[in-house]
Length: 520
Image (cartoon, rainbow, N blue to C red; front, side):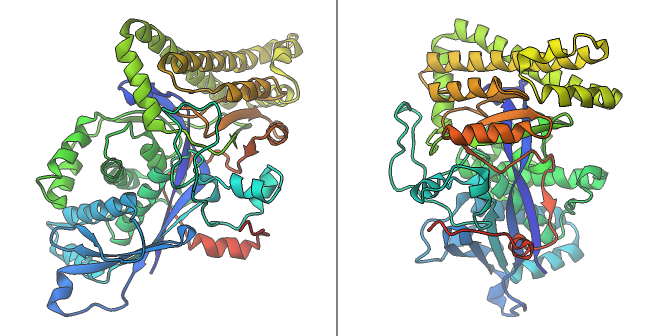
């Protein structure tokens, strides 16, 4: 029977660059964009031949890329060998996810003969793994432009679910991008953390299929018990390991943590945990390396975090992408070494501004819980007017002042975050908030019902975000972006992390009878 696991994409709204270092936190929101891994046996029966207990078959399929890879997995060393001849390059994130997930399963059942025998029988049947990503992970802007279609959410919604992915064949055309950070990746993406979501979905799907963990379902995701927490911690450790090995470096891990646990306030784990694993992998087996990792004490910190009620997240794609996050991070780190005195001052100010955004949003959630009617009334009022009128509109009702002050405090703190990030970008010679983005974000924040706007994560040309109030301001912002060359994406916030789905998502979309157009 097939297992379908999904993991969400993310948006980092505070903590850019600082999140790379402990103990700096970042607020990361997860989204409705999800990666799916469908895991099922490749063979219906078990081959009794002795050779079959030494190797097993693995098929990895990505229908959106029209790619299929065939592999042999050694049941002794747990290493994958690509035996495809015509399928092109493999996917290192999926390959590492398979190897480390199987190794984690063997490590868990090593001292339980019954479960170990059951595991071996499942392994001998092989794996048939299909990978699917929501359209919002990828850019379809070039196809939309080529067809002369409007840059609207409605156009995106009319695409077939899990559409074929656009592959870049030429350089980006961002005229004001820096050669340090402009790159033309093979796949045009929107910066939602596709590799982390994909890796997590594959790891979680395999571990659930092999009986190692029980993933939360959509209906119980918010009511996980201690057993589920332990299962998610295992998925997290294996996913972080596979993702770091695949990308060849140990990042902050916020994207994988979000994919596993959902929206959160995150403080990274100590890099030594996985740096040691990467080194040991050169001299140890997968099983030894994974056992070592699972026995480590993970010191990452996370607190559940979601937007206050009656607020909405909106993302927009201002161009064709082309920002290279590792290069931007490298340039900023070089600047910090070059100008340590000034950079330390700015770093501290940025940390304080980030903390102010986080604090005001948490206070707004508190007000919503303690004074729900007052809170709702203020949000409704502020959603219809621009920010400079918020306090005047409520000056005669003192019961509303705390909410309005918190809203204005969050806005002011985000403006300071943006100002400091621009300063860092100028000093480092990279466009963290490019001038074109600045103009669009300023005009967005001047609109009625807009609380915050900024560039997510490391910034650049990939995306912009806004957080709006009430029920109608999000649509007004989407229309403003569309008329000014920014493509509004369909994603909204969804605080769920990794989830066990009830079936193939393609079948669900067909059942929904979604109307679609062909962009080929």
